[in-house]
Length: 103
Image: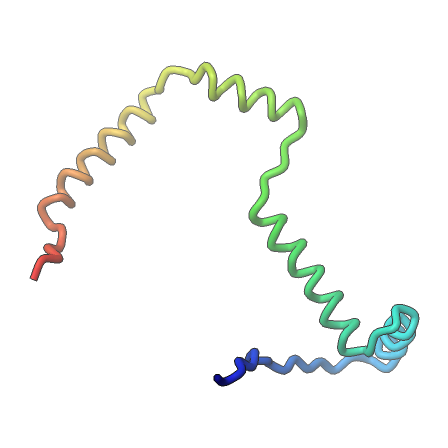
């Protein structure tokens, strides 16, 4: 039975000496190496950026407005009706050009 080794990649950065000294002091205060400190800080920031892009946050007022729209949607206007017609037409046209996956 072989053991699985996780693939690791290297990240390098050149920073001004003052920045390096600040990072060293902060790493020392947290009990981490500079490399560990950088990876932890960068990973935390990356996760926050990804969450901001993936999660929609609403104020209570906006949340209530959205719920009201979902419960009582407005009637489709002319532009929406035209867009729905174009969509249905394109689906009909694409149905004839679908690839047959059977051998």
